[in-house]
Length: 163
Ligand SMILES: [Zn+2]
Image 1: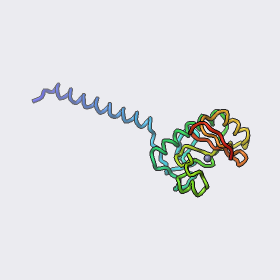
Image 2: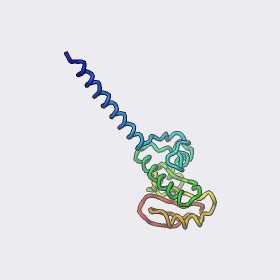
Image 3: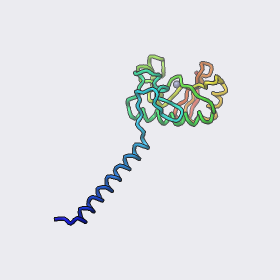
Image 4: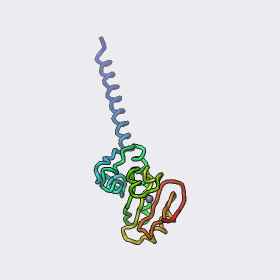
């Protein structure tokens, strides 16, 4: 039979083990916060919500984890741009599943399909000033669409074109 001390020691190890597991899980959830992509009000970054990704359309809800991650990565870059610009940035179009991308006339291999692109505009309406600002501050693809009211930004390689 085991002594009382031995039993207590085993119990302590169990407590320590459970504590370690608990802390590890807490850390894991801190670094990969679960986002409810079906709720438009859920924040995906400091300044952006699920609504801006999906436009409130159930057909635009991203379900692929790698696309969800692409969206979060882009949101963080857009947060930095928003902060540097110093005024709210609106989103005209972000994630577009292939069927929707085709319906709106997007490029067949558009980065919007992967959640890696967004068409953005400044809510203060200074679109040309904003486009210039984006060209000076964004590292990635830039589609200059100011005359159509937006600037396309993506996380692909550095390049610029006109709409
Ligand atoms: Zn675009």
